[in-house]
Image (cartoon, rainbow, N blue to C red; front, side, top):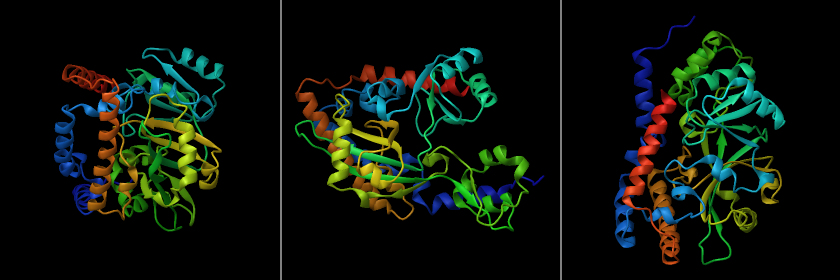
Length: 353
């Protein structure tokens, strides 16, 4: 078996991250935003003004909101079949629920509260389901899987005083994969792919017995089935597809979701054309005010352009939140925020234990 790369891998990772800001820690990328955020908070007279942005979502969608509560308010015909499973539920009980709802493999399992692809898994059979259940110690969801080929993140905003809103960000997701050349081993192909290198430990554990395999020329191997940037997915700026037709589609969808004004839809669809006709749309997740306009992580996008777009995003959040507050929606208190943060921390510790 191939030996794991040592110090050389660590150096490669360092320089990949250094010269590609999309891989920088969020705390560094957001430094200019912190200053702007404080200014908005002073104007709103509350650090937690954002909590009034989406009254229909717990904490506006910032602090580890429950996914099952969000799926419950999404129109049934465009959302996955979703089951909430309590920790400690036996495999037999889970399988019975899966069969009762006529779910077939693959299925998706994910914690009810989590972000950035945390413990999300694509499950292909009962043995993998058993393994997931045995490791899980928190409430989790089981969802039907959609095989529509195109996965997008569509960010939508509607000011409460207006009848129509707009899409202001669209990102296309390219899942982490390798393409064979008929000569290189899987080990060599991973070593030549920057995104794969950053996922080395996970990929080695997953493909340890295939590292010396040579992929035939033109054959593609999907390394990661979950469309999350932190798990190697390439985000591609697709703002070029934004037009009045797309805005109208998401006006119709969002108008069916009460008290949500600012959100990002992570969805699957069959094509851009079908999306604009409102056909074959499958909402994988709906994220609130804590989401980002993910097109900024396109490898060709500049950091200054990303800062501009993030500032514009928070301008919208501020306007919506202040308006809602004047209409009677209360901002969260510091005590409430602390309680949610404490709950999030305890949940994550338990999930990782």
